[in-house]
Length: 378
Image 1: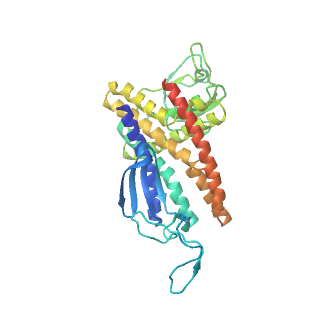
Image 2: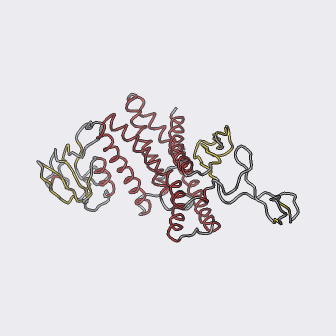
Image 3: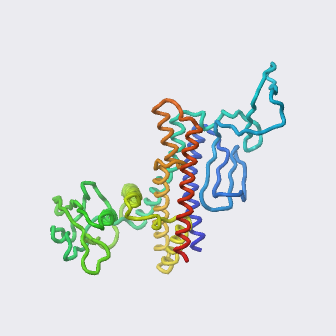
């Protein structure tokens, strides 16, 4: 059952991502040849409004295939010089054809992606990752409205740690970390995680309407696995109304964005390695483990844990696709912004080579990550 839930979660997130591309393509009058869920051979397909909607064999990934300026070349048993009837005889060396999803011939340039303005194309490419972040916000709003949020209020201060030495007490509200305004206890946990190997953290807390700024140094006492600040949150969550849910839903999305970016920094900085990454196999296993461990705690805990997992996945997918990596949406956006600045396109063959190289690297990385995921399961 956990595997089925994982596939449904992942599929829903991918559909929402591709829906962003699809809706903005339609808004810009770009023809969408195919909207598909999954990879590999087509299991089911139906043409609606000139677009083929299909379900494919492998339940990972998806695609929104749009009309391109580069028409496909078909070999045909015509002589080198053929004739097109346009009212007068004209010599033609090459003939390009494109057929629509319904099989009728159409103008190769009409409704194509590359025929639109650069800003229209930017909006279409950016829409996928942005829709992932919108989905993350919607799910966060649902979660906050349902169970509330953990405010950054200190519940307990432990002896022997920097927080106690600097005068922080139970009931204090942490308002800033390293000068940045915070709204959730999870932001304190993340700051501690990023400084768990050492370093100082500037903490601003509020007590009786007065703010005080101190510098804390995480430390590990006997029995600690990691360095800690020595403070814990208050028990329970704070409930809020509709407007508060919208607001704290946005704060929660911001937290997950920062979490994703900080994890990338740890990867680049060597604090974590490729072995710590998870691909589709690892994600399915993690969702299954979450399901197995949560179902005995009741339906509410199960749904909340799966909701948290979905938020993490969709925020992660949104951020990763905005990174300037060739073959991903972010990589395509780099070339489009270059076109906007230069006033002309990068030659398609050069851009294609960059994306192909990026795709090759990503495929190798995916195989390595998948191998590690399988090894972890054995």
